[in-house]
Length: 187
Image (cartoon, rainbow, N blue to C red; front, side):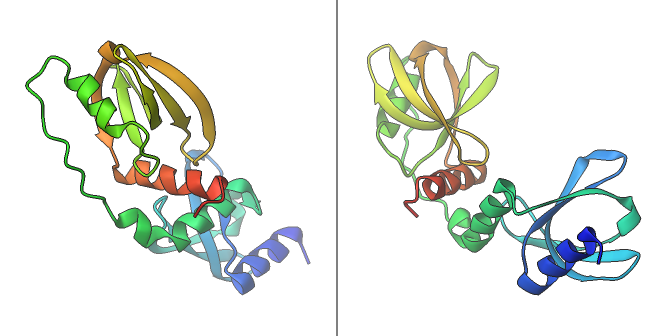
């Protein structure tokens, strides 16, 4: 039996997640498990990055460039699928808008120390950095940065005056938070 058939069969029998990359399409990546396959076709239950079923994909096996299996992404996605209902739940935050010129300080101060709320903070109207606000002073704050797959990317200090916006507890951040906690084994 070819290796690819063994991987497809294992995915089918155990509902084991695999990642499929197609030729000539470096942007398209499917994550799911095999429902069925034959010599020429594979049928996959696809999942979104938020762990929700996203239809059935049927593809020619000949068009598959490679298959990822038993990797960190598949393990993390299994956690996301298992806890997808938790990701949907948005905690109601009462963050009133401030008339103060220190609006940025007031928001980071309210988020300080909350390890259940992950925020993306826009710095200088350019990039967003995601993580938990660990400590706040009058002029700056410490952010424990969290990667897209929940990986701990360490601590960074930003000047509060450089903050230009927030995305607080959105679905992407709830997913990161879930994976961060899973990696830290506190689910």
